[in-house]
Length: 475
Figure: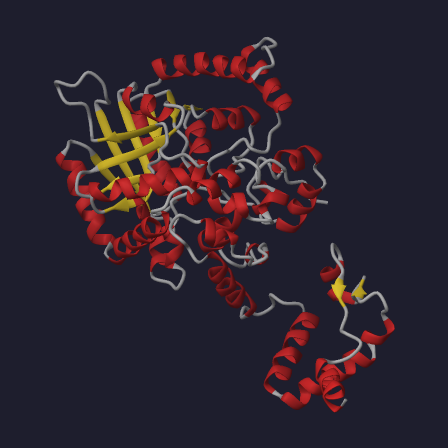
């Protein structure tokens, strides 16, 4: 039995974690609402937006063209940020990024930082690095703050505490307050607002991610619905933005296109409540803003992905739409996937970032129904990429059980030989097909039992279509 706490630790135990998730009553209640809330809003947002198809295609084209000259756009971004008085740092991997951030904070004597929701900082485990350096990180997005109090990991890209129920949230916030809070959403939000206002006022630095970075102006774009990103940027004297290198877009004129598709895909809104444009440190005539402005550009495997056949995965703008419509995610939630990113796009990104062998079950965690691609604001061909990963996995020696390899080998040979195919289908219909009146195989033997562990397998028909056609034609 696994001793891993899947809600708190990253892992490579997808099968065990998903099995636990399927019997977790509280989690199943939380996931039951995803289809009627986030997925429904996303679907309605596209249906009521006549320009959605051409705008999504345009966003996709901009992403594609940007990645084709990513190095050039990053150089432009760096020059623009420096021109406005900011500093730019390049991080090869997560450790590199954490070292850069902690070095900056230590050199300024920072002891407490406020953070705005950032999956990139989750990806590099920045909070652990900060705490190890004696610096207190405080998440300021309400969902992230709740997750931080629970010492768990986010389970959704835009709804990090989606896996928690109201009683659990009430208990967490009451413990944080040192008293039993009124058990209403309004009162719990009011407590969090008061608590976090104090954190903003006393923090030595603010750390954010970035939804986009505009190369021509050096602008870091932050989108939120709670206003915490804006306070994280404007109140502390030091601001550090950490973003993956694929977040760059060439021009400010490109931004409205992404704002329109991101909000609709993420929450079904026409536009998110707050869009913050951070343009470097505060100028002498400005009333608010940081005295120092740092941008950390994270590679962490993205350059390698850019050069490979799955570069389209870098189109992702982290809206979470593919999670909301995925039948797998809606049954097992986000923690079962093991890495920072979950759902269909996580099943692509995690093997690319963390290694395919370590995450060999993730490409199979999909029904390939295509709902993820239909919901994606930039139309990423996620099913096709999952098939490519499966193909890569099956070519690795030792990754497939010998019985499964033999079965696939026999199937491949029969597809190339009509005579062998006719014999095998004749044999199957006259043996298995005629001894199972139910038409279903309840349990496959030996190593093939996994196919029937959670579902029945359709048995061969009692008669081949070829035979039926010949008989009906003769009559």
